[in-house]
Amino acid sequence: MEFSYCKLEIFLPEDHLPSLRQALQKVDAGHIGQYDSCLSYTPVTSCWRPLAGTHPYLGRVGELCTQPEIKVEVTCLTRNLEPTLDAIKAIHPYEEPVINVIPLLAVGL
Image (cartoon, rainbow, N blue to C red):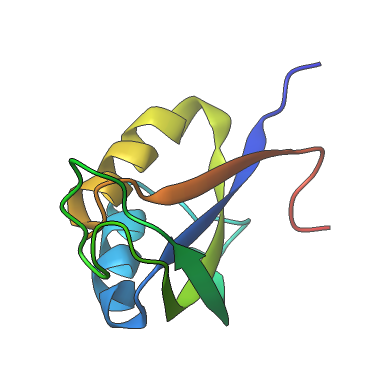
């Protein structure tokens, strides 16, 4: 089964939300019917441990880091996934951004 739409879950520091919104709008992610720029975000607490050879935006190599972040959820046409991911990565501060791609059966019901 092919999916026309997918949902992206993007985890990042809250102060990067304006840049992310702008990047998503430029690639038309979050376009549902007669509305664009549709997304939602919620506060989350994330943790990670940078390993040897990394250059973490937050935290120190070898130490567990726990930080407040936001999880942004946005829909995207599957055919536009690659440019959307490129746009997100261009503004994301992390070396290894967490971006989950989830196929959707339907959008905007």
